[in-house]
Picture 1 (tube, helix red, strand yellow):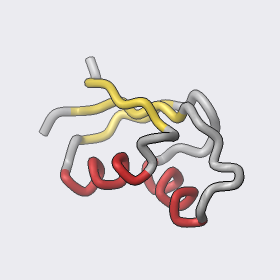
Picture 2 (picture 1 turned 180 degrees about the vertical axis):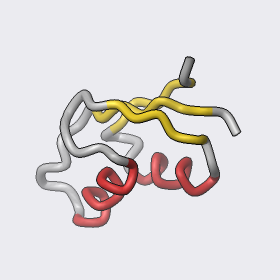
Picture 3 (picture 1 turned 90 degrees about the vertical axis):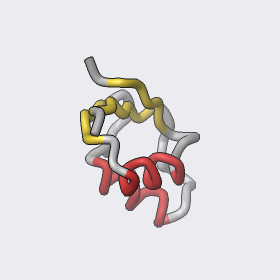
Picture 4 (picture 1 turned 90 degrees about the horizontal axis):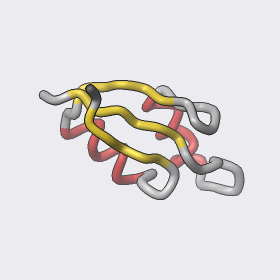
Length: 60
């Protein structure tokens, strides 16, 4: 699996509880924080759920 870098670009304020929980599950909790994770189908599904709040790029 390839590593991907996920950066939070949007605020979870006024969002569903499930979207907030998804951000926490990805390891994000503040704006402009980044995490590097494996690009598994489970992680990609989480990213798809909050795609309007995050930016995804390949990790170097």
